Image 1 (cartoon, rainbow, N blue to C red):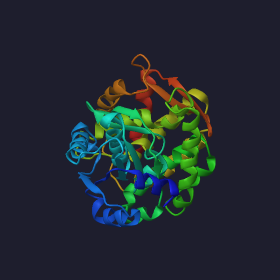
Image 2 (cartoon, rainbow, N blue to C red):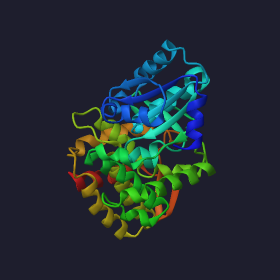
Image 3 (cartoon, rainbow, N blue to C red):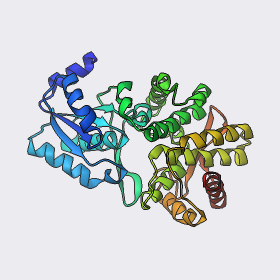
Image 4 (cartoon, rainbow, N blue to C red):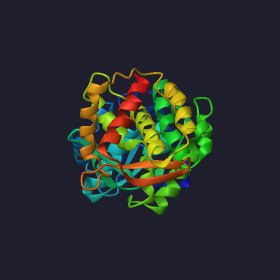
Length: 331
């Protein structure tokens, strides 16, 4: 435990640990013991479908019940849903209290827990309500991955590959065997980008590679009986973005061909049941994408690996073609 983390815990008037019902049985007692603090536990239902205002209200009500003041501390112990939820609840309670993220999934370790984005889903759209608020500290410990299902690990690999496409080609070689050695590298890349553009006015937008269609696919699949994990939807979004990059900017076709093989691995623990009938409802979600400019979706595409371009406006017919391309590849 870092000196900063010890100081944050010692200075807190009250400590709350937010987690979910999947993480709590494995890691809540061990984490409380390791931190050496007496905490009030808040255990939520797990899953993206619970990343909503009702869950935030439950957190706020618990904070109020135990008279949490502005010196209280929330420790978010979980994956991206928990770090997003907990960060949002903390950043808005009494106009902001401190919070610490302890990510327990690979995806959260390399992405969601870092960078100061918090939020909830609303009105059927991903992360429609949120704030920019930095965690006081982010504690990364690979031991938390021991209990993670392989499907969740693969979801995290997709986000790690994203960093390979936008910044470091070495990360395109990441797999289940070597992923732990690249966790800190991914976090460093994100921190470097966020430091240059903390509230996403320019450079930080490259972190959305694969996320424009990815979020739309994820939102649509949440309305079906076969929801996708965030990384799975982003993997599909990256495939579509690579196809568009080849069509618009002449990206080397070998890049997409190589990713198609990786895509089989990334989706090997789930069943994709999308068809042409899903195209229209998926595209409808693009209307609510946070990155839109005058209702027009803005994509991150590649001139080459490590050379991303942001704010690329793509004609609707090309977006549809890209989506059909990736659906036909995986279904």
